[in-house]
Figure 1 (cartoon, helix red, strand yellow):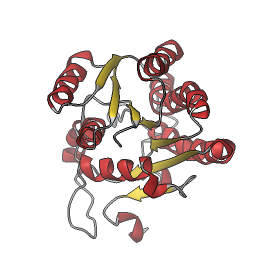
Figure 2: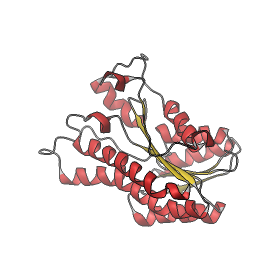
Figure 3: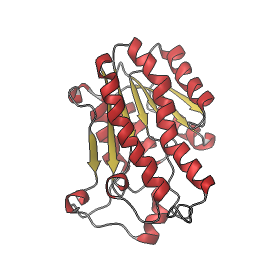
Length: 246
C-alpha cells in the first residue's frame, strides 16, 4: 500500500476510523473525510503520529460541491487516486420505520447520506482512476440489504441500492481496470450501532461474537490490494456466519 492514495469517507469513527489506521500501518497515503470536524481532526492527529502522509477534508458527501472538492483536492495534492472507500452512512432506528409511518424528510436524508453519497463520490473519483489506468472502489452496504429488516425501510433501501450500483459500476468500468466491490457487514460494534444494538440485542452468530471494525477494515484492505485483482462486482458478507442461517 506504500504507493497507494486512499480516500475514506465517514472516517471519524467506527469502521472508517479503524480502516484508516490499518492503511496507515501499511504506509498508504490517506485522505480522510467526515462531516464531524472535531473527531476527524482527532483521527488526523493519530495518523500523523503514525508517520504517514494524511490529509483531513471536512465535507458532506451528500452534497456534490463538497464531494467534487474532496476528489479535486486529493488529485491536486497527490497526483492520483487509487482507492475509494465509500463508508459514510447513517442508521437511525428511532426515526426509520415502515413506508406508511416513515417521514419523507427522514427517507430523503437516509437515501442521500447512504446511497447518493456513493453515487457522488464514485462520479468524481472514477475519472481520476481512469487517468491512472485503474483503481479500486469499496462500498459499504449491509446484511440488512440482503434479507430485509422490519421498520427500517429507508435504511434497507439505501443499502440495497448500493449493491445494485456496485454491480453496475463493476460492469461499466472494468474496461478501465477499475474494480468495484461491496461489503455487507453484520452486527459490528461501532458508535453508530452500539446504542441501538444494546436496545435490540446482538444477533447470535456461528462464531459466537459481535464483529469489530477491524473485521471490516481488513476486508477493505484485501479488496484494495492486488491480492483481489480478479474480484469485481462482488457482494461480500462479513457477518460471523449469520447469513449461513438464512
